[in-house]
Amino acid sequence: MGVNIHPSAVVSPKAKIADGVKIGPFSIIGENVTVGKDTVIGSHAVIDGNTVIGEKNRIYPFVSLGLPPQDINYRGEDTRLVIEDENIIREFVTINRATTKQDRVTKVGNRNYIMAYAHIAHDCTLGNSIIMSNVATLGGHIEIGDHAIIGGLVAIHQFVRIGSYAFIGGKSAIVKDIPPFMMASGDRAKLYGLNQIGLKREGFSQENINRLKKAYQIIWRDHHLFNEALEIVRREIPPFKELEILLEFLVNSERGIVR
Image (tube, rainbow, N blue to C red; front, side):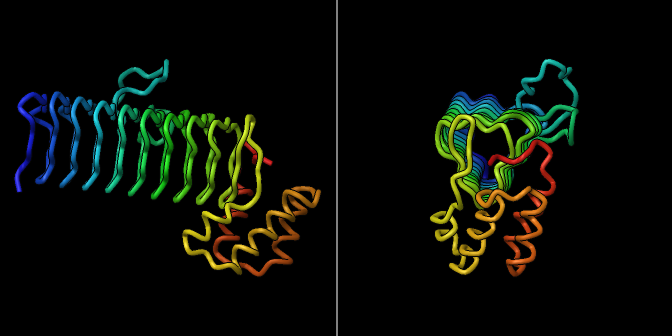
């Protein structure tokens, strides 16, 4: 299939470029970059550092990937950025490679849609099928679960976790963990119940949605002590996978949970 590189692009001969890759005008690809099959890189993109990009990604103009982390203690150590398959990364998105403070890798999973001007800082880990709206901003060391939706102009504090299928409304400030399956919004963000519409769209059964609603009511609205509420949920709601995901997330929180 070959590789289609515009004559004005600057691509290091040491870069590993797979078949079917297209690289647009004036883009710059560094020597330690790997680009997987059928990925399309638009004009004026800069991809540098120890960066691995998987297959069938669509990278739009003026994107910056794999440049050094915005960390005053970073001294040029060998750290990585890994972006897996079938992601859409829109204009002016910035994704930094990691620091040495965690696993030395910033990671983006599969089939994510990252809209214009979004920022993913060092040491973040994103799952699959996530939507980050325009100008959504992640501090360092953030984890985002599968199918989460982050609204426009959202700012998320470093070390926060966002659970799977969570929905965060636009212009929110997130300083504590957002549990899976929940909606949150505001400055500082508060919970507003179960993400029912999102769960229905993703094929969750009405029975399990109702059970998660009951868990939400017990934990956040019935005025129980936290550990007592978890015990009531375990006692009153039959176990199922999503409930276990929710409870495990809550128990393992280090920053605390948005209420």
